[in-house]
Length: 251
Image 1: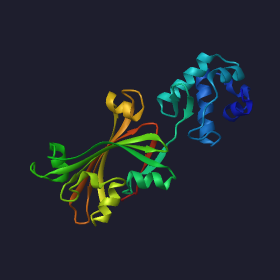
Image 2: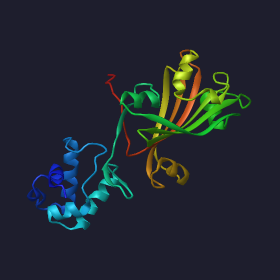
Image 3: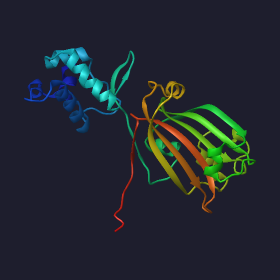
Image 4: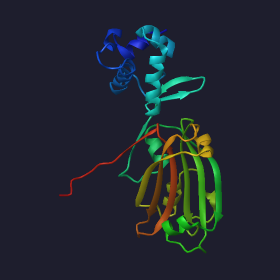
Protein backbone atom coordinates (compact mmCIF):
# COMPACT_ATOMS: atom_id res chain seq x y z
CA UNK A 1 0.00 0.00 0.00
CA UNK A 2 1.22 3.50 -0.80
CA UNK A 3 0.66 5.25 2.53
CA UNK A 4 1.49 8.66 1.07
CA UNK A 5 -1.30 8.15 -1.45
CA UNK A 6 -3.83 7.41 1.31
CA UNK A 7 -2.56 10.40 3.27
CA UNK A 8 -3.40 12.60 0.27
CA UNK A 9 -7.00 11.51 0.63
CA UNK A 10 -7.50 11.42 4.37
CA UNK A 11 -4.65 13.00 6.30
CA UNK A 12 -4.55 11.60 9.81
CA UNK A 13 -6.89 8.66 10.47
CA UNK A 14 -8.03 10.23 13.74
CA UNK A 15 -9.84 12.89 11.75
CA UNK A 16 -12.44 10.28 10.76
CA UNK A 17 -13.93 10.03 14.24
CA UNK A 18 -16.41 12.90 14.32
CA UNK A 19 -19.15 12.24 16.84
CA UNK A 20 -22.68 11.89 15.57
CA UNK A 21 -21.70 11.46 11.89
CA UNK A 22 -21.82 7.97 10.31
CA UNK A 23 -18.35 6.75 9.50
CA UNK A 24 -19.07 6.15 5.81
CA UNK A 25 -20.21 9.79 5.53
CA UNK A 26 -16.91 10.92 7.04
CA UNK A 27 -14.99 8.85 4.47
CA UNK A 28 -17.13 10.33 1.71
CA UNK A 29 -16.58 13.86 3.04
CA UNK A 30 -12.81 13.32 3.18
CA UNK A 31 -12.68 12.12 -0.45
CA UNK A 32 -14.74 15.10 -1.60
CA UNK A 33 -12.51 17.50 0.34
CA UNK A 34 -9.41 16.01 -1.25
CA UNK A 35 -10.87 16.40 -4.74
CA UNK A 36 -11.98 19.99 -4.04
CA UNK A 37 -8.51 20.86 -2.78
CA UNK A 38 -6.91 19.44 -5.93
CA UNK A 39 -4.92 16.79 -4.07
CA UNK A 40 -6.66 14.19 -6.21
CA UNK A 41 -7.40 15.08 -9.83
CA UNK A 42 -9.78 13.87 -12.52
CA UNK A 43 -8.60 10.53 -13.87
CA UNK A 44 -6.61 9.66 -10.72
CA UNK A 45 -7.03 6.17 -9.28
CA UNK A 46 -8.17 5.68 -5.69
CA UNK A 47 -6.24 3.21 -3.52
CA UNK A 48 -7.91 -0.25 -3.26
CA UNK A 49 -10.73 -0.58 -0.73
CA UNK A 50 -8.76 -3.08 1.36
CA UNK A 51 -5.84 -0.64 1.68
CA UNK A 52 -8.12 2.22 2.66
CA UNK A 53 -9.91 0.06 5.23
CA UNK A 54 -6.61 -1.14 6.74
CA UNK A 55 -5.12 2.34 6.96
CA UNK A 56 -8.26 3.88 8.48
CA UNK A 57 -8.91 0.88 10.76
CA UNK A 58 -12.48 0.52 9.56
CA UNK A 59 -14.36 -2.20 7.70
CA UNK A 60 -14.26 -2.59 3.93
CA UNK A 61 -18.07 -2.43 4.01
CA UNK A 62 -17.84 1.13 5.33
CA UNK A 63 -15.32 2.14 2.66
CA UNK A 64 -17.38 0.50 -0.06
CA UNK A 65 -20.55 2.31 1.03
CA UNK A 66 -18.79 5.68 0.85
CA UNK A 67 -17.41 4.88 -2.61
CA UNK A 68 -20.77 3.58 -3.84
CA UNK A 69 -22.42 6.85 -2.80
CA UNK A 70 -19.86 8.86 -4.76
CA UNK A 71 -20.24 6.61 -7.80
CA UNK A 72 -24.01 7.23 -7.74
CA UNK A 73 -23.30 10.98 -7.62
CA UNK A 74 -20.89 10.66 -10.61
CA UNK A 75 -17.96 11.92 -8.52
CA UNK A 76 -16.19 8.57 -8.91
CA UNK A 77 -16.19 6.09 -11.78
CA UNK A 78 -15.60 2.34 -11.48
CA UNK A 79 -14.17 0.30 -14.33
CA UNK A 80 -14.26 -3.45 -14.03
CA UNK A 81 -10.79 -4.87 -13.55
CA UNK A 82 -9.19 -1.39 -13.45
CA UNK A 83 -10.36 0.13 -10.17
CA UNK A 84 -12.05 3.32 -8.98
CA UNK A 85 -11.21 6.67 -10.57
CA UNK A 86 -12.02 10.30 -9.92
CA UNK A 87 -14.40 11.24 -12.71
CA UNK A 88 -12.94 13.49 -15.39
CA UNK A 89 -15.32 16.32 -16.14
CA UNK A 90 -15.33 18.80 -19.00
CA UNK A 91 -16.61 22.27 -18.16
CA UNK A 92 -18.62 23.42 -21.17
CA UNK A 93 -20.11 26.94 -21.29
CA UNK A 94 -23.69 27.13 -22.55
CA UNK A 95 -23.42 30.74 -23.68
CA UNK A 96 -20.92 30.03 -26.48
CA UNK A 97 -21.83 28.23 -29.71
CA UNK A 98 -18.98 25.76 -30.13
CA UNK A 99 -18.64 22.36 -31.70
CA UNK A 100 -17.52 19.25 -29.82
CA UNK A 101 -14.22 19.44 -31.72
CA UNK A 102 -13.60 23.03 -30.63
CA UNK A 103 -14.45 22.34 -26.99
CA UNK A 104 -12.15 19.33 -26.74
CA UNK A 105 -9.27 20.85 -28.71
CA UNK A 106 -9.32 23.83 -26.36
CA UNK A 107 -8.65 21.36 -23.54
CA UNK A 108 -5.81 19.61 -25.37
CA UNK A 109 -7.80 16.42 -25.99
CA UNK A 110 -7.16 14.05 -28.90
CA UNK A 111 -10.44 13.71 -30.81
CA UNK A 112 -11.66 10.68 -32.74
CA UNK A 113 -15.07 9.51 -33.94
CA UNK A 114 -16.84 6.28 -34.81
CA UNK A 115 -19.41 6.68 -37.56
CA UNK A 116 -22.75 5.03 -36.87
CA UNK A 117 -24.64 6.53 -39.80
CA UNK A 118 -24.09 8.97 -42.67
CA UNK A 119 -27.11 9.11 -44.92
CA UNK A 120 -29.40 11.13 -47.16
CA UNK A 121 -33.14 10.78 -46.64
CA UNK A 122 -36.52 12.33 -45.98
CA UNK A 123 -36.98 14.26 -42.72
CA UNK A 124 -38.79 12.91 -39.68
CA UNK A 125 -41.53 14.94 -38.02
CA UNK A 126 -39.26 16.42 -35.33
CA UNK A 127 -36.66 17.36 -37.97
CA UNK A 128 -39.30 19.08 -40.11
CA UNK A 129 -40.43 21.11 -37.11
CA UNK A 130 -36.94 22.09 -35.92
CA UNK A 131 -35.59 22.94 -39.38
CA UNK A 132 -38.83 24.39 -40.77
CA UNK A 133 -38.87 21.92 -43.66
CA UNK A 134 -41.61 20.34 -45.70
CA UNK A 135 -41.81 16.52 -45.64
CA UNK A 136 -40.53 16.46 -49.25
CA UNK A 137 -37.24 18.26 -48.51
CA UNK A 138 -34.29 15.91 -48.10
CA UNK A 139 -31.85 16.03 -45.19
CA UNK A 140 -28.46 14.53 -44.44
CA UNK A 141 -27.85 12.81 -41.10
CA UNK A 142 -24.60 12.37 -39.24
CA UNK A 143 -24.67 9.96 -36.30
CA UNK A 144 -21.40 9.29 -34.52
CA UNK A 145 -19.78 8.36 -31.25
CA UNK A 146 -17.29 11.03 -30.17
CA UNK A 147 -14.13 10.23 -28.23
CA UNK A 148 -11.68 12.44 -26.35
CA UNK A 149 -8.36 10.78 -25.47
CA UNK A 150 -9.96 7.45 -26.46
CA UNK A 151 -12.78 7.86 -23.91
CA UNK A 152 -16.40 7.86 -25.19
CA UNK A 153 -17.67 11.35 -24.45
CA UNK A 154 -20.82 11.89 -26.52
CA UNK A 155 -23.28 10.47 -29.00
CA UNK A 156 -24.29 13.02 -31.64
CA UNK A 157 -27.06 12.80 -34.22
CA UNK A 158 -27.01 15.89 -36.46
CA UNK A 159 -29.50 16.66 -39.22
CA UNK A 160 -28.77 19.27 -41.93
CA UNK A 161 -30.98 20.29 -44.89
CA UNK A 162 -29.50 18.76 -48.03
CA UNK A 163 -29.30 22.13 -49.81
CA UNK A 164 -26.36 22.91 -47.47
CA UNK A 165 -24.65 19.50 -47.58
CA UNK A 166 -25.78 17.15 -50.34
CA UNK A 167 -23.16 14.43 -49.91
CA UNK A 168 -23.12 12.84 -46.41
CA UNK A 169 -19.58 11.59 -47.02
CA UNK A 170 -18.28 15.13 -47.58
CA UNK A 171 -17.78 15.46 -43.82
CA UNK A 172 -14.93 13.73 -42.03
CA UNK A 173 -14.09 15.99 -39.06
CA UNK A 174 -15.93 18.98 -37.64
CA UNK A 175 -19.42 19.72 -38.95
CA UNK A 176 -19.01 23.41 -38.12
CA UNK A 177 -15.72 23.55 -40.05
CA UNK A 178 -17.48 22.17 -43.13
CA UNK A 179 -20.37 24.62 -42.80
CA UNK A 180 -17.93 27.49 -42.31
CA UNK A 181 -16.08 26.54 -45.50
CA UNK A 182 -19.40 26.88 -47.31
CA UNK A 183 -20.14 30.24 -45.69
CA UNK A 184 -23.09 29.06 -43.64
CA UNK A 185 -21.77 28.35 -40.15
CA UNK A 186 -24.44 28.77 -37.44
CA UNK A 187 -24.20 31.97 -35.41
CA UNK A 188 -26.71 31.24 -32.65
CA UNK A 189 -28.72 28.32 -31.31
CA UNK A 190 -31.54 27.31 -29.01
CA UNK A 191 -30.71 24.38 -26.73
CA UNK A 192 -33.01 22.26 -24.59
CA UNK A 193 -31.40 20.13 -21.85
CA UNK A 194 -32.78 17.40 -19.66
CA UNK A 195 -31.56 14.40 -17.68
CA UNK A 196 -32.72 11.00 -18.93
CA UNK A 197 -31.93 7.32 -18.34
CA UNK A 198 -29.86 5.86 -21.18
CA UNK A 199 -31.19 2.88 -23.14
CA UNK A 200 -29.23 -0.34 -23.55
CA UNK A 201 -27.93 0.29 -27.08
CA UNK A 202 -26.60 3.79 -26.38
CA UNK A 203 -25.26 2.69 -23.00
CA UNK A 204 -23.13 0.06 -24.71
CA UNK A 205 -21.76 2.64 -27.13
CA UNK A 206 -20.86 5.04 -24.31
CA UNK A 207 -19.48 2.19 -22.18
CA UNK A 208 -21.74 2.98 -19.22
CA UNK A 209 -24.38 0.88 -17.42
CA UNK A 210 -27.87 0.71 -18.91
CA UNK A 211 -30.28 3.22 -17.32
CA UNK A 212 -27.38 5.46 -16.24
CA UNK A 213 -28.28 9.15 -15.95
CA UNK A 214 -27.11 11.09 -19.00
CA UNK A 215 -27.64 14.63 -20.19
CA UNK A 216 -29.72 14.81 -23.37
CA UNK A 217 -29.45 18.04 -25.38
CA UNK A 218 -31.40 19.15 -28.44
CA UNK A 219 -29.83 22.03 -30.36
CA UNK A 220 -31.40 23.99 -33.20
CA UNK A 221 -28.89 26.38 -34.76
CA UNK A 222 -29.50 29.13 -37.31
CA UNK A 223 -27.47 31.10 -39.84
CA UNK A 224 -26.81 34.83 -39.83
CA UNK A 225 -30.02 35.24 -41.84
CA UNK A 226 -32.00 33.38 -39.14
CA UNK A 227 -32.52 30.21 -41.21
CA UNK A 228 -32.44 26.92 -39.25
CA UNK A 229 -29.49 24.88 -40.51
CA UNK A 230 -28.70 22.32 -37.80
CA UNK A 231 -30.79 20.06 -35.58
CA UNK A 232 -28.56 17.98 -33.29
CA UNK A 233 -29.48 15.53 -30.55
CA UNK A 234 -26.65 14.63 -28.16
CA UNK A 235 -26.25 12.21 -25.26
CA UNK A 236 -23.52 13.04 -22.71
CA UNK A 237 -22.42 10.75 -19.84
CA UNK A 238 -23.42 12.34 -16.55
CA UNK A 239 -19.99 11.86 -15.00
CA UNK A 240 -18.10 13.66 -17.77
CA UNK A 241 -19.50 17.19 -18.02
CA UNK A 242 -20.29 20.32 -16.08
CA UNK A 243 -22.43 22.64 -18.19
CA UNK A 244 -22.13 26.23 -17.00
CA UNK A 245 -23.83 29.48 -17.97
CA UNK A 246 -23.32 33.12 -17.04
CA UNK A 247 -26.47 34.76 -15.74
CA UNK A 248 -27.13 38.52 -15.74
CA UNK A 249 -29.57 40.57 -13.71
CA UNK A 250 -31.92 42.19 -16.24
CA UNK A 251 -33.58 44.53 -13.75
